[in-house]
Length: 419
Image (cartoon, rainbow, N blue to C red; front, side, top):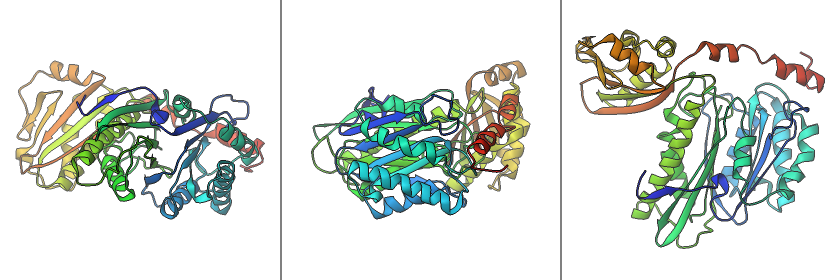
């Protein structure tokens, strides 16, 4: 843990001036009682920034939130789980906009000051008959210290909620950063189905906040992969309301460096928690690549290894198969020289100079049998480095993702589809 910041309790509502609420609307199943809608709101004006999926197929809430972040200072975030509102055409956009309009009116905000996010099954219309009545409940239920409920409400295939908050001192003022996230499948670099919301009571200029978010996302959510699939709904949105007082933190200053370090930690911890909770995964694997000709080459190698189904299957089977790793290195399209490649597994040399190292196979198996381990690949060409966080591929993952029929069955009951 850095001396710059310390972990505190509170999650998304740890920073001053933020309220939240969560309700059960039965978005996916009207008989279910789990929390599935949430609202985060600032009591004062905010600056906001976000990053979204680079998938060319984007969900309606992504399109709406991107527009609102450009047009105004977003001050509230409405989110639901159970339905992604993706590939739902004009009606999906109308539903997303209607939700922001209603919430904006209830909060006495402009519609453009409300962002909207959704996560769940793709292709089904939103069950607005159950969602609309709950919007007023979310607004009237806004409270402090409800951060954990928000983290629970945004879960889909997650097995646990994910939240974190930290405190640091900048220019004599105590600054707090809070966050919650969800995601367990459809996770791949360049925004991984994941959502992350971040709040801070620091005072930031809009350009500084955008720069902070972009850098932190690049070193966190763009460095994780579970299954190599990129979602239609990925969103990271951060709100800063300046409630802690003091002057604005500006780019290029010592204060900015401290804030960036704390934000990097928050987002990286959230990103790692998504991988650890991957759908039925059993291993958390860090892939470090160094000695590449360039940063981009190191990235190509890391992503090729971390996304290889063969490599991930061997990890699940406790098999230290460095041959599968080096073959992925070779097809990564990076500059490599076979006779220079070194591969270490859990600190033990498995391959040196492109050849099998003199090491006990039993010792290597013990390393891969651990819940977490590191794969280090040295190309021995130059100084390019890159790190990515990945998981294994289990039979249970395949079984879990074989069918989403239950979603469509309920949608047919709701009259939302004829399938």
